[in-house]
Structure formats: C-alpha cells, structure tokens
Length: 106
Image (cartoon, rainbow, N blue to C red; front, side, top):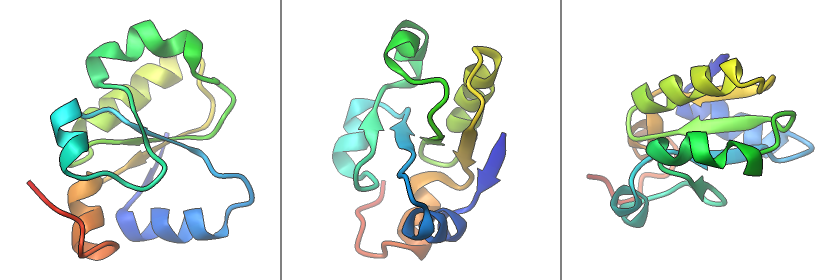
C-alpha cells in the first residue's frame, strides 16, 4: 500500500488522468464537519458489507481523521484483493493544515 501525505495527494490529484475513488472511512458526524471534495463516505465498520459495491481494480485513496483507521482499512482492502490502494497519512487533519486551510477541523 502506498502512503501519501496531504501535499503529495493534492499534487497527485491535480495531475492524474483518472481520479481515484476517495474513500472516507470516518463516522458520518465527522464527514459532516469536514471532507475532501468528491470523497465518498463508507464508515470503517461498513467496509466488509460494502466490498461488493467497490471496484477492486480502481485506484482507491483511503481517508480518515489522522491516517490510522484508513491504514487499517487499506490493509483490509489489499487482503480482499484490491490492487491499488493509497493511504492518506495524516488524514483530513493534515489536509486542513496544509492543503485547505479554510477547512473546518475537530
């Protein structure tokens, strides 16, 4: 699994030809406070039951608050056969500090 910090992910998203799935695995209340544009919410606890709705070949960036839950989900996805997973290390917290300084935080 690859790891990108917030600035690396921003640069990557700005330059890639096909946008990856931005998979946010936080809780709905966290997602309501702040989110990265175009991200999709599937809370961590719902990932196993949502696997069939996800494309295991699509590049997937896993996002959470600080990068810990997303890393665990990323490993889970890899074990489930996902071949192109990126973890946002530092999570939306780092994104708010370095990329989108107007983003609300919690």
